[in-house]
Each structure stands twice: as structure tokens, then as C-alpha cells.
Amino acid sequence: MHARRASLLVTLAQEIVGFELLKELYEEDTDFKEIWTKCSSNNAVADFYVNEGYLFKGNHLSIPSSSLREKLIRDLHGGGLSGHLGRDKTIASLEERYFWPQLKKDAGTIVRKCYTCQVSKGQSQNTGLYLPLPVPDDIWQDLAMDFVLGLPRTQRGVDSVFVVVDRFSKMAHFIACKKTADASNIAKLFFREVVEFAYNSAVHSATGKSPFSLVYTAVPRHVVDLVKLPKVPGVSVAAESMAKDVQFVRESVKAKLEQTNAKYKAAADKH
Image 1 (cartoon, rainbow, N blue to C red):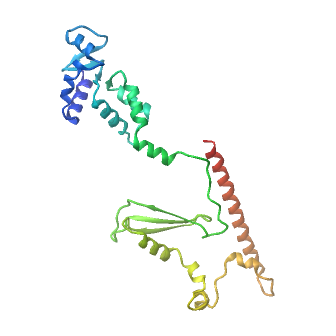
Image 2: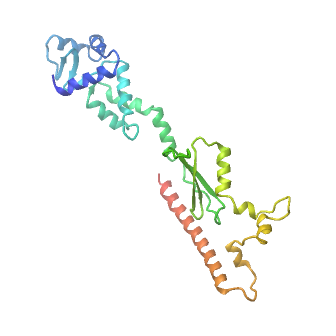
Image 3: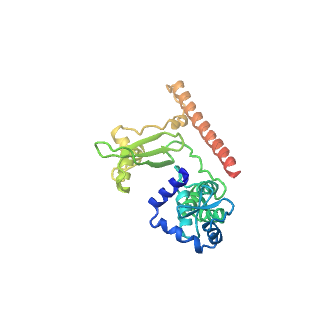
């Protein structure tokens, strides 16, 4: 017996309970009963023949109409290293090993209805025109948050990273955390690691002043605020120039972000 056919039969016998019962289905099977009868009587039918009680077409095992067909399709369809195989690759994998008349049609139907594939497509395919988020006017006005999970656990028990990104400057905070942390824990991490400046610059209801104004006698100025200062004797020209340069950079960055968004939108909307 051909080594490839023998290996296929051994594998199927190990993986499928009652695989040997397949032999009993050929005699009454709609697709194969005539071929089975002729081959069993030693009458040649194209390249069909019986080997070890199984009907082969060349090196391909003939599969009678049964639930085994669907199982084989699903097993090969979901056997890709990077996920479920597409229709054509699933059919190609099946045709390397098996034969039945409606193989392509059956495989196409099952792949098309695969729930896992439908969910994946729904998440990855565009369902409309690309609508980028508005570009912020300044730093720390709009934040993006995400998590990197499944990292090696440290001695402190942290196994994940909480990532906070300022959408304007693209500055990122990488904060160690635990996968089991709930919303309350994440909120505490966010305030401890990211929010300092905004809270301390705000007026507190109890004191009527901001913490910065009390502790440091004045609120630290935002660089852009320096541009708005009235010109008074003693103001450094270099400082004023620096402030204007910073403002120019931010305006340039905003224009660049808007240009990038427009480019992404044009490319995405083609699809």
C-alpha cells in the first residue's frame, strides 16, 4: 500500500472515533455505491479502487455522504498557523487528501458561514468611509489608552502595560499594571502617573486657589501663554522668540496631523 495512503488512514483512525465504520457506508452511498459495487467485483472504474476496505480515487480517500465531510472541512479550514484558511486554501488542502463530487461546493458553503471568520471580517473590514478623529489643538487635550497584556510576570506580580498616549505630541506613558486590575485600579494608576499638572492648576473649592498658586506662589505658565504677555521692559527677547517658536512648532504639527489624516482617509476610502 502506498505510504501516503497508509499514513492518511492511520491518522484518521487515531483522530476519529469509529472511523472504520466508513467502510460500511460505501455500499449505500448515493455518490459511490455504483463505483463501490464495480470495484468490489474487480471491475475497473477509472482510477477508483478498493484498498484495506476503503475506496480510493488515486491517492485520495473517497468520503461518503456523512457528517465526516463537514468535520474534515472544518478541521482543515481552522488549521492555519495564523488563523482560519480562506476558501481556496481550504479546498486545496482537502483535495490533497480526499475526494467526493461536491467537495468544492460543500467547502465553500461551510467557509462562507464560518462564525469565526465572519466576526474577524466584521472587525477588520471597512464598513463605510474613514472618519479620522479631530486633531487636538494642543498637548494633553486628547488621550488614547490601550493595554499590552500577557507579558512575563515580574516579582511584583505585574504582567501588563497600561499605555497612555497624547494624540497631539504622540508622547506615551508606559505604566506597569496587572491584567486583573479593575477600572478603579486603572483610574488610580492614571491619576498617579499621568494627571498632575491639570489638577494642581485648577482652583480648589475649599481654598479658592489652585494648589500650584499656594505651593509655588504662582501657577506655572503654559509656554503658549508667554506669547500673549504684554511687552514690558526687561522681558527677554530670547524667551519671547522661544515661545513663538514653540507655538509655530505646534501649529506645524497640527497641520501635519491634519495632512496625515487626509492621506489616510483618501487611501482608506478607495476601498
